[in-house]
Amino acid sequence: MVPKRWAKRAVTRNAIKRQIYNVSVDFEPQLSVRAHVVRLRASFDRTHFVSASSEALKAAVRTELQTLFSRASPPAGA
Image (cartoon, rainbow, N blue to C red; front, side, top):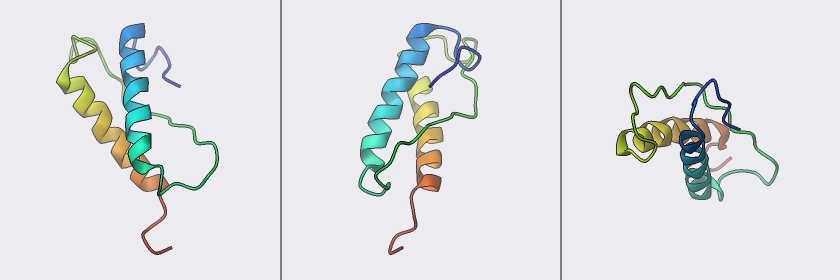
């Protein structure tokens, strides 16, 4: 879920969703088998990220997602 308050343009929300899917594949072996809801905590304003396909937006989203997924993953050996 990517609400309009975090990203106003649909193309930006869709780019964020693609990043969610891509990062979740990396963390899939570490996560338990259940439904997970990803809730981003930062907004992605058009003034900072002019293009939805910009590398800056992708890097910012990927960094936040990796942090969130690492928190959701159990520690190694647990």
